[in-house]
Length: 222
Image (cartoon, rainbow, N blue to C red; front, side, top):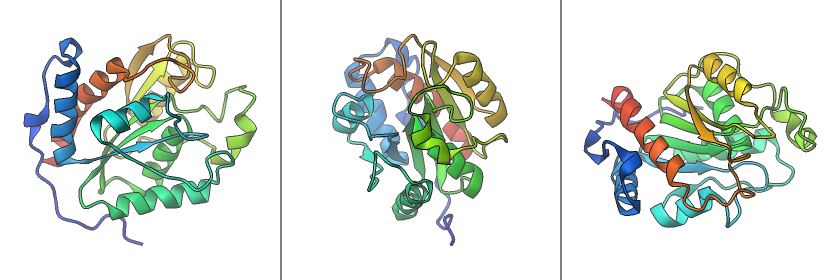
C-alpha cells in the first residue's frame, strides 16, 4: 500500500500572522483559512469522539475543519482506527496536518511512527493519553493502543500538555516530547483539555498551533 504518492507542494507562508497571541478571533479565523489553502487540516478526536462542547467541535464549526470519523468511539479498535486515518490521508488531494486530542494524539503518533510523513506535513498533539504510565480508571479501554512510540517522529510535531491532566503528567509530557523530538507547549491548568473543560474556541490553543505551523511548516513543504 502506497500512502505517499503525490506531487511536492510549495508552501506559501503568507497565511501566517506574526504575533498571534495578541490577535482577535477574526484574525485567528483568517489565519486558519489561509493555512487551510495550503494543507488539509484534519481533526483527530480521541475516546468517545469530541462532543459539542469540545474545542475540536468548536474549531470544526468556526474554521471549517474536517474531522476524522470512526465507526466505534466507545470501544476503539487500534486496527480500525488506524485504517480510518490511513483512508483519510489517502483521500486528501493535499498534504494533511493533524490536529489530534488524547487517544487521537496517540493514534496519530503511532501512525506517523509506522508510515512516515510524506503525505502529512505535521501534527499538533494535544494531551496524548499516557497509556503506558497513567493510572486513569478508563485506561483498560484503550490499553491495546500501547505502547507509545519511543523514537523520534519523522516530521514536525508538537505536544501541548496541561499541568493538571489526569491522563498525562507534565513531566511525562516533557519526556514524550524529548523521545518524539516534538516541541513541548504548555496549556496551563486546563485538565485533559477536552469536553469536561469549558474551553470554547480555545483561542490559546489555536494561536499556539498556528504559531507552531508558521515556524515549522515552511521547512517541511518548500
